[in-house]
Amino acid sequence: MAQHSEHDLAHPAGLEDEVPGDSRAADAVVSALEAEILSGTLPDGRPLPAERDLIQRFGASRTVIREAIIMMSARGMLQSRPRHRPIVKRPDYRTAVDSIGGIIRHLLVDSTDVRNLFDTRIFIERGLVRDAALSATKADIEMLAAALEANRAAIDDSEDFYRTDTEFHGVLYRMTRNPVFPAVHAAYAAWLSPHWLRMQRYPERNRVNYGSHKAIFDAIVERDPEAAERALTDHLRSAWEYVRVTFDSAR
Amino acid sequence: MAQHSEHDLAHPAGLEDEVPGDSRAADAVVSALEAEILSGTLPDGRPLPAERDLIQRFGASRTVIREAIIMMSARGMLQSRPRHRPIVKRPDYRTAVDSIGGIIRHLLVDSTDVRNLFDTRIFIERGLVRDAALSATKADIEMLAAALEANRAAIDDSEDFYRTDTEFHGVLYRMTRNPVFPAVHAAYAAWLSPHWLRMQRYPERNRVNYGSHKAIFDAIVERDPEAAERALTDHLRSAWEYVRVTFDSAR
DNA sequence: GCCAAAAATTTGGTACGACAAGAATTGATT
DNA sequence: AATCAATTCTTGTCGTACCAAATTTTTGGC
Image (tube, rainbow over all chains, first blue to last red; front, side, top):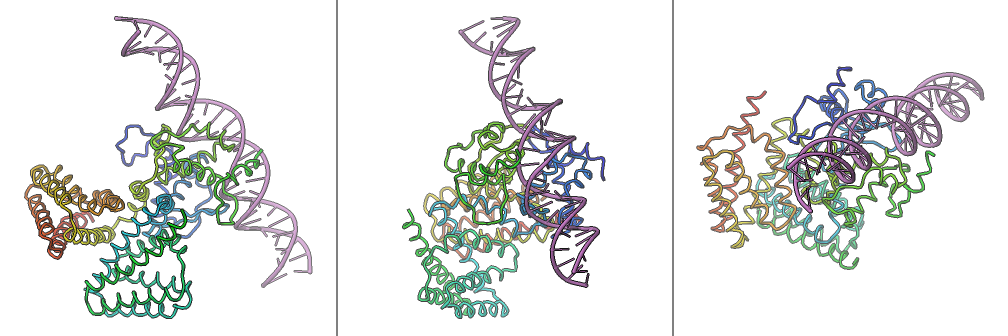
């Protein structure tokens, strides 16, 4: 597995891409390392072998090895702190959404852009509460009730309220039992929170939001998808109003 | 001559980053170039200046410049073909989802993973057809009708049918008038199609799928969200059955 | 004068070597 | 055995060099 590499690197012998202009070098290293990460040969959380070792293993120059490492870091398969060994990060949905965070941030310059993204959140959560009203289990309801109660207890602490607010909505995503949804929720939290945090917060407002959460919860408990959807929509639309003004005042 | 650059790169006269964690070099170049891309100084579609020029502009070594280019390519801000100048790509939602494609592919190894992703598609499209049934405009309906007709006309050509099938669903995403949704649709198409293409296709099956599309369309026209959702769910669930068998037989 | 072929130049891909400074490791000292 | 200093990695960055592909310029034929 060690010295065949030169041939592999020139012609990865793997997939033939559509573009005729071939010839790439670090890609072969990336493929090999990613395969090792996925197969578990390179265990998650462990540091990558030193560059020199990789140079030997692949028979490539440091340039190429470094290039591969940089590419993998950018893709989220490695977590590289400035002066440290890159840490192997086996990808999951979470790291996937993290990896686009950089670009998404560039897209959220305008209030329109933020609104578009936020609208997709409303869209998703409308579906979530609908489904919850239709098919939440007893355990689901209990989870949601606990999140709601934590949210109520935090009304007087705006920072904690924000946290429990996020968590309440997070429960809705988890209730799907589909790991993609929590990742989506994390994405929304990461991308929208910068704008949310500019919003004024105070107990009175928190109380209103808690009331919205309770209304959503109640509708779910009463198995009323229409009411749940309506409560959710009202809740998020009104929340948007508070965010929007931070845009208007900023320009 | 090694660390003179710190002055130039550490403070590119641009944004001051928040993390005190010192020492990153290419990041400054990335920030500067990304800012130029977003501001339009580096126009979309145009090639990036030659590496040697950037070396002069930034007073950095080729190593750093190349590193920056690689990072930006991985992020989708540049499209770099092997031996060519990188092309500036101003980011949009589409390139954002493209940029995670690499990782997502790693996540779709198992039929369970594909199923989870596909379930989110069902979830989204359920909401889409619901909303369409409630608020589609005349123009929307016409677009959908045209896509449906194109789909019907392609029943005997499985390849073309697949294309028009995708397009029919794509119209549903576009009807939201939210640019995030078409990007999501493109993502589904890109990530799921490898598995979809393994599915057997023949006119008889196409006819059934067309029938499903028609049922969805009719429900939308008749403003019946429940029926639309039901038709959509049936359609995609049955489609999944045809995909699933390709997993079972593969292992 | 126009277009195609050939030569010259530019450019990206890769290799090798060097060194500073931050980690990690080792060893000495208490 | 624990602590701290000295010694070895290791990564980040720089520099130079060379090749082959791509691009531009020149040349040659019509």
